[in-house]
Every structure is written in C-alpha cells, then in structure tokens.
Length: 177
Image 1: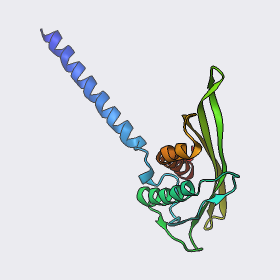
Image 2 (image 1 turned 180 degrees about the vertical axis):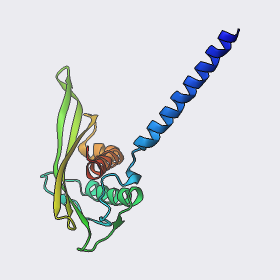
Image 3 (image 1 turned 135 degrees about the vertical axis):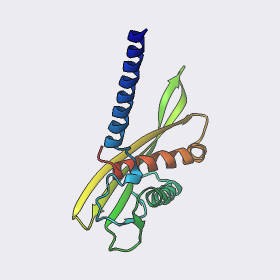
C-alpha cells in the first residue's frame, strides 16, 4: 500500500513537472502573430500603398481597387503602421497586376468543363528609411465552370480573389518566411 502511494505521488510530481516545462516552453517561444509586428522594424511607422498598376493585357479594375482597399484595411487593422498618402512614408508599397488570364483547366469527353482564371501580381516594398527594397510575386488560380462567362465568373469569384490575394500579399510583406 505504501509503495502504491509513493508510485501515485511520483506520477503526480512527474506530471506537474512536465506541465510546468510545457508552459515555460510555450512562454519562451512566444505566440507568433502579425500583431507582434514580427516583420516590421521598430523605426518603421508609416506606410503608403499606391494604386495597383495595370500591366496585364486583360484587366479587372474592380479587383485592383478592391485589393488596394482591403490591403490598406488589413495593414492598418493588423499592424502598428499608420496609412499615409505622403511621399515621406517610411514604407511605400507598389503593386502591379502582371497577369489576368483565363484558360481551360479541365476537359471531359472533348468538352471543356472547367476554366481557370490566373491572377499574378508583383509587389515592391520600398523602405525609404532603411534604403531597402524587397520584391515579391504573388500568383493564384481560381477555377470556375465552363458554363459561366468570364464576367459571370469574375462576379462570383471577386470576394474569394480579393481575400486570398490580400492575405498572400500581406503574408509576403510582413513575414520573413
């Protein structure tokens, strides 16, 4: 009986030590989040996001406007940066729409069943304070039924395209992955 009680006590102590070790490990690592301003140097306070430039032969001006607006909202809402239109911003972000291309993605019984809209953007983040420039490419494809016209597909995919591309741009800008 005494041996059983010592065994139970040893298990409780071991479990307690393991729990404390896990808690300290998590606290030491920290929880990563964009609100921690992980990829933003402390001296960077303002950001200027320019209108998205059209470079693709085919274009969707509504997508370009919505992407720029949503990116501004996301940066202001999830970082400590302040949006400015001043030429003296610490960071300036320029984005170009380089590709906006519909294509066939699936054929069944010699009939097109699915189409794809590929959107590619080129992002340039210029740090005027640190005289640094970083460039990123973001590309995503969006599937739609071949029974839809491109205009119908654009209307149906607009929210998904805006959300997905904004998140991808944001992640490229504010992480060092």
